[in-house]
Length: 218
Image: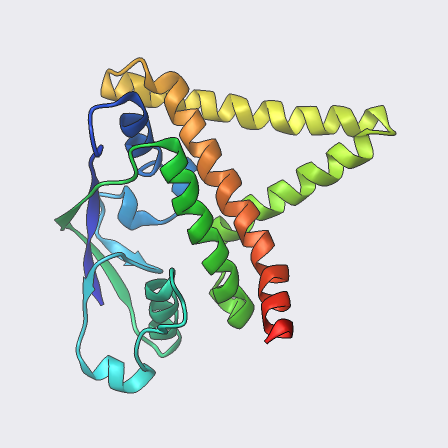
């Protein structure tokens, strides 16, 4: 399976659109999803738009249409498990326009996180570290905050985690503002990445009880 990289382009000229475009094409925002930011030809775990031989569908089946999102990642996981290789060729590019507003970004990544949880429930082996880290960090933060209500040591740990995270995001914002010569990104990129992480992680965690309750009801 071979595909190109994404040329992430702001949907409009607004501060939010520029910030979001920078965030969704940065490793801190999207982890090791190389097709979103890499310019190096390499083997990857998934790709957005691709070409492959027709006989692969006969071998591993079609896209799972019960998945409203992440159906391509689930298909690519089956592809790799069956012995296939996925190759990123950055010489071909697809122009991608992410949401132009933080509310749109929140909805998009909530949808991504929820359906990634459904894929993980069906096939835990498909999870990558970039997908486990945000919900795990959110759970640890909630636990430390809860314990901190009665113990100053845990509260200090919680504040330390939050401060470290915020400093990292600000560092990315400064780097992107300098690279793109756009001072607004100093604040916009951290806000966009934080929106991505929190919406994705929350929806991922909520997908498990939601799926259980839905199946129990039916």
